[in-house]
Image 1 (cartoon, helix red, strand yellow):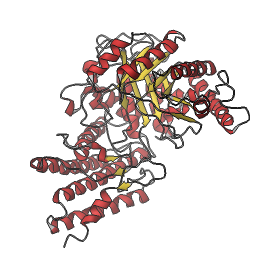
Image 2: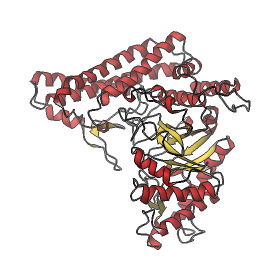
Image 3: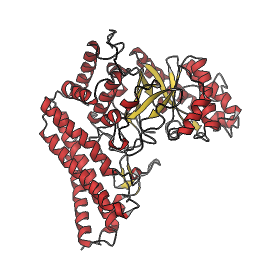
Image 4: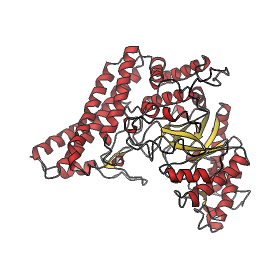
Length: 559
């Protein structure tokens, strides 16, 4: 976002705090009025999740003072800014990172980088947390001590060195207030001298309970520091497993469990979390604001309304409705990042909107989502009431269009076919009888994007950069979802389908791609473009055959 909008962001947050509209202690140290009903967030954290193995994002969410002005209490440093990569293990064995070696130089450089980041965050008045994959050890440690089974938490050597790593992290970095622990997967793209992984990450008895108890003992009890243990891809979709974990670990004031608002990954159509409010441990609600499966901020995708008040697929379930549960302690947002590669954005408007509404609502949850949205419109975007109303229509339409255009309201297909900058082969419902209604939703989604373009064109934004980006990103969204639509219709016709119809769809597909590429050439604010290939995580890969390869199979079949 440009500097004018950023300033408005900060000024508005400070103004609201000074007026005492945030329950609890305001940013100016004044005591605000207590909430009459729902409690304000006791824990409010944010994380920028940089792409693994790539340079960090250029974003104002990396500025601790900016987060402080928004009302956040803590900044979470993502995986490769974690303390475990800044310890030299000399207290255990000086040969792990020998003095004068390339690996020691790497660790020392990382430690100096982390000192600078953590200290600046503390000076801004925020707590410091590290997003930490487990189990990760130095390669030299694993090799020297022949830790062939170190990925098993039950291994006594693993436990010994885990405790040693924890002690070193908090000793080396006294700025550190706690860890956010992930066991769902392990990334090592930015750690050339470390290795890791975990065996049995979904087993409460073999992995989750013993690891959580170890962390509780070493960090929460002995050090009086905090642990946020992420449930994702481990024990977030099974109430039985979650309850087993809860029963197997005694609660502690410093131990919290982080739970995504929906099950699994941040996909539309996934069920509302069944474990929020369950068990005995305090929880934070985890929300991604730049969703990797839905454009990454390259086009409008307003999810804050659905998170707070309920997505249509959740049939009345919402964060608002579970917020009164005493286990719910607060919110953990990912302001930027998640996933891999692009699209890469030049303007943070759509991320900013989601972050602003979620963070401000969490600080005063008795407000309606709409009132916070309108506040953003009037004080950050400087919109008139009439233009704010139109902007809201645009944003709410975006949520409907995204759901219908990628997956569909019956949730009959996997949403994984498109993600990040990739377009794979569009899948179809297993039941052919549902195909007409399924395809109609793809048509409806494209129509909604046309309506969003019209809304964006009709709004007067005082900031020309915002005006241009809204118009460009709405067109971007239309182009992407029109390509999706053409692909679904071609897949439904089949290679031996009506030739005239096939030709018309290919012509539209080609024209839309051409317009999409022209949009990027003519509008510098435009995000980088999708590719017509399926997702590939491997470094250097340009993707696997996707929608482009599928359409090529149809070429020559029309007449």
